[in-house]
Every structure is written in C-alpha cells, then in structure tokens.
Amino acid sequence: MEYDVLVIGAGPNGLTAAAYLQKAGFRVAVLERLPETGGGMVTQEICGFKLNHHATYMLLGELMPPYKDLELEKWGVKFIRPEKQMAFLFKNGKTLMLYSDPQKSAESISQFSEKDAEKFKKMWAEFKEMFDKFLLPATYLPPLDPVEQTEKLQKSDELGKKIAEISEMTPLEVLNSYDFQDPHVRAALLYITTMFGLEPDEIIGFLVPIYVLRVLNSALVKGGTHHLASSLRRVVEFSGGHVITTAYVKKVILEDGKAVGVELEDGTQLRAKAIISTLNPEQNFKELLGDLGGEIGEELKDVAERWEWERLSLFISHRGIIGKKPMYPKYGEDISEFLNVVMGYESEEDVLEHIKNCTEGKIEIKGHGSCLSVFDPLLVPSHVPYGEHHLLRWEMRAPYEIKENGTKIWLHEVKKEVAKKCFEFWAEYSPDIAESTVIVEISWSPLDIENHTLTMKRGSIKHGAYTSLQMGYNRPSPECSSYRTPIEGFYLGGASTHPGGMVILGPGYNVAKVVCEDLGGEWKWEEIPSIKEAKQRGYL
Ligand SMILES: Cc1cc2nc3c(=O)[nH]c(=O)nc-3n(C[C@H](O)[C@H](O)[C@H](O)COP(=O)(O)OP(=O)(O)OC[C@H]3O[C@@H](n4cnc5c(N)ncnc54)[C@H](O)[C@@H]3O)c2cc1C
Image 1 (cartoon, rainbow, N blue to C red):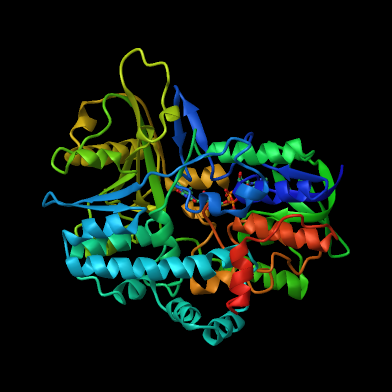
Image 2: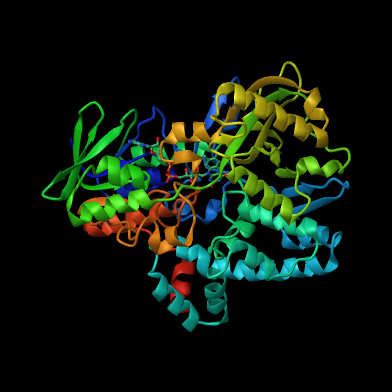
C-alpha cells in the first residue's frame, strides 16, 4: 500500500498532523496499535458513566490553531470552561478561591493578604502579556536555537528581556520573585504550577506563566475528552484519509538510509514518502529504527539512552455514584461549583514535601477532587430512575514504583486500597461522599498509564521530563527538534518534541507544516496573528 504520509500513533498529535496533511491534499494513513484512537484522550464509557482516565483539563482550548483551521466546532467539539476554577480548602476552615477572572481571584486572596492580592494582579497581568505575545505564538512554531532565542529576546524590548530572564529561573524562583507572603497563597500557586509534573527546581521558569494562566482557564471537552479525538479522526476520514487501528508498528523500513515505509507486527508493509512518528525517543530510536550503526545510529541511540522520564506520575480514581454532588459544609455552599477542589496543602512546604515523598516512592493522599457531572451532565447516565447521578474524579501525584516496605507495583488490590483512602480523605471535607451509593469505581495508576499508551513510559504523561536539556530546541535533541531527523523521510511529532506534552496539539501542528513543505505541498491555513506580531517585535 502506497501513501504520501504515514503517521505512527493516533493520539492528539498524530491525529492533528494527519488531519492537516490529508486536508492539504496528501494521501495519509494513521497507524494506531489500540482498537480505538485518542492516545491520552481516553473517555471510557462504563455503565453510563464517561470516565476521562487521562487528559481532562484542556489548557488552550479554542486558542489551538486546529480548532479553527480544522473547524472542530462543526464536528461537535465544545469546551466547557467554568469561571470558578479552583478552590483550596484549608484546615482552619478558610478557602482560597481562584477564578478565570483575576479580579475575583484577587478578592479571594485579599482575605489572606491584601498585599498578596495586589501582587497576584501584577503577576497575572505580566504573565498574560508574556503568554499572549510570546509563549502562545512560540507554541506553534519550531523552536529556535537557545542562544539565538535568548539574543532575540534580549535585543527586543522590556517584555522580551523579562521572558529571557525568567527562562533562566526555576518555577520556585519565578514565584518567589513576586514575594507572596501568605503560606496558603504560596501553596496554591505552587500547586497550580506543578500539578502536571513541572519540577519546582528545574530551569524552566518560562513555563510558569503558561501553567498559572492556563490551569486557571481550564476547560472540559463536552461529552468527554475522547470527543476531541473522534472529531479529529472524522476530519482525517471525511477528507479521504485512513485511520488503521489495531496496527502495531514494529519497525520503519529503510532503503539506502532513507525511511520509505513501516512494517506492522503482522508483517504487513506500508510505504510512504514521509513517516511521522509520535512515539517516545526510546521507541523511535531503539525499536522503530533498530540498530542503524554508524555515527548517526550511535547519535540517535544516545538520545534514547540519555532520555529522562518524569520523576512523578498521576493516580486517578473515578466513582460513578447515586447521590448528591459533594457539598463542603465547613467551607461554604458555592465550593461545589468549582471545577477543582484542592485538599491537603497548608503551605508551600506541603506541596514540596508531597513532590519529594512521591519521588522517593511514597504514596501520600493529597490532591484535587472534581465532580465533573456538575459541569457536564452528559458524563452520567441520563435515564435516572434511582435519583441523582454524579461522577467524581480524584487526581493526585503518584510514584511509578511504590517503595514502602520493599518495592510494590500497582496491582489491583493496591489501587483499590489507595482509591479507598483517597475517597475517605475527600469525605473528611465533603461528608456526602461517604453517604453516596457507588455504582462504578475505576482507578488508573502510573503503570496503567504506561500500559495503555506505551509512549508514557514510567507513567510519564508528557513522554519525558521537562528539563532545560529536554525542552525547546533540545526536545528530543538538537538534531531532531526541527521535526526532521537525520534519517531522510523520518519525522517526529509527538509530545517528546517542542512544545511538549499535554493536549495542546503543538507538535502535531508543527510537524504537519514541516512535512507539507518538504513534500512540496501548499499550506492553506493562516498563522495565528500573534506569530506575526511576535516576529515584528523581534521575539521570534
Ligand atoms: C493520567 C493523565 C492525565 C492527563 N491529564 C491531562 C490534562 O488534564 N490535560 C492535558 O492537556 N493533558 C493531560 N495529560 C497529558 C496528555 O494526555 C499527553 O501529553 C498527550 O496525550 C500526548 O499526546 P501525543 O499525541 O504526543 O501522544 P499519546 O497521547 O501518547 O499518543 C500516542 C499514541 O501512539 C500509540 N502507539 C504507541 N506505540 C505504538 C506503535 N508501536 N504502533 C502504533 N501506535 C502506537 C499509542 O497507543 C497512542 O495512542 C494527561 C495524561 C495522563 C496519562
């Protein structure tokens, strides 16, 4: 079978790349080892409840170029973005409430400290400018060499200089530079920054504005995250592309050092002018390309061997219940209207301690709970003969290997025990939880995450750690970060390339543009306006 482009992996990035390239007029096939597409965009329907086992909170939503370019709204993608985003509950009965509206967040912060409220407003305004003018446009362009990037920023204007400055700082240093005084406020901001696995002491400070701003603008995909995957798949197929599931790609076929096709596990061979892999560096450079030998082979093997996985992963537990939505009597009625309710952190030290403990393999029950059905009734059975139904979702950091009295792995019994503790802990804040009738309970551990995708080794949800040596131009290595690799015809476009993981569709968008150019196609879509403006300002 002959195609123009083969895409390995039907996660958010693979489907995005395939959709653009098929619409650009190429003949495209996506190859996915699982019977269903989506990768990290899983929604499992079980007994009428729709469980988002992986990605749940969409950070960029409508700001992602594919949303407009591929007309995803027409395919039914709707984002639900509550204004009430995160409530932090503290032991003294106080609550810190954070909204997508910074003014309202500042009002809540002022109960803790008037000065911190002012600092928050200042920080938000600065972060928003950095995000709008540089960080968002830089997401949808190939990364620049770090020396060139720094020079450009430093030569530009005050904002550019500030971005260059925070890029040399750690997340903790960036937050400290605003000098928040109240321990609760500090805890909340550090939690938001690190909840998706950012390390507080890595030199990746430029990510803080993205995470603070976007986590507080989180949206759900109506009907479950998988709906975004099915819409992208429909774009591919309705434009004439193929999506081939249950197709495990075993190797890339090389002829005269050039990638010309792939071989599946069952021996089927497919040929194409370009192969895009959205898998992780170990899969790409050790499994798919095999032993290449020579200088290039050694270089690529070295990238795979040096690749660092994230030190922490996530544990998710869902309960489909008959009962009322969780209320928080000690904390006020409207807490149940917040998308995420965070419990267990009284200070920044608690957040740091949790990270440290997980890194050492210890499970500590702290995290955030969400009653997703409050925001999207489609997530629970619509026929409700026995009363109100709700879907509870607990999410917390967790180690891949549990090291308590020896090393344990995440067997069924371990997950059940941990989930029980999580819901008991949540019930300390919301006693209703203990009263509800459980219809379904399913948990996903770091091991399940790895088993489900294979790309997220050791539960690494972003296909690899965010360190200064693994971001931007270095993701996954300087030779491969332009999405082209030293192997002609072999391209990369998954979360282990710039801008990295999460459902932001950046790698898929960027690689599609590069492949379109290399195959002599016409890119029909306009760049987002902020790219042109960032170039005019000299940032990019
Ligand atoms: C528990 C959890 C919670 C998360 N929460 C969020 C969140 O709230 N918000 C957010 O934005 N992101 C979240 N993420 C992260 C996000 O899901 C990932 O970063 C994202 O899915 C990466 O996209 P990708 O397309 O690069 O790769 P993936 O989604 O990993 O897709 C890769 C695909 O390749 C397939 N594959 C693997 N090997 C082969 C092979 N040999 N042949 C063929 N196919 C193969 C896999 O089956 C998979 O479908 C979460 C992830 C997890 C696990």
